[in-house]
Image 1 (tube, helix red, strand yellow):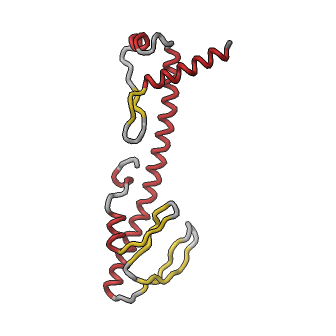
Image 2 (cartoon, one colour; image 1 turned 180 degrees about the vertical axis):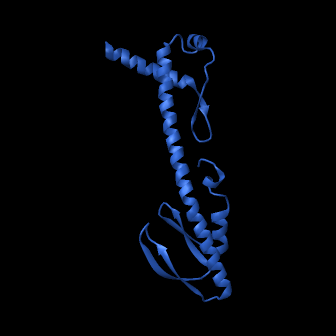
Length: 164
């Protein structure tokens, strides 16, 4: 008997949760209705559903919103970590461009980091192109102008203050 009541309450929670939602924003996050008159809402839209059921549905939605918040905060932190890397890359491209304008066959001796504490020495030819890591195991070759445009076309989200 208790299992049947629990199953009925779970079904009611799903219906209540769907009733409480009123669409989604552009990121797919649901919009939740504000209930001004609780008695009227319970009587008219939920056919007398218990207040505890509605509170349970709101609690479930609150936990989902907290999950959305954590995900957005993680995206914001990742974007903030990318900003210095993008700025270093733009500076390096400008140095390569300047060196190439001075001498067509020039090379630059440099040390670059393979990880946080491991560096390697390299001799880089100023060939007029650079390879940029695009993520997801993809790399693209760009001219200096294209790379500068591609990296600087939009300010990184962390600089704009946008969450993603």
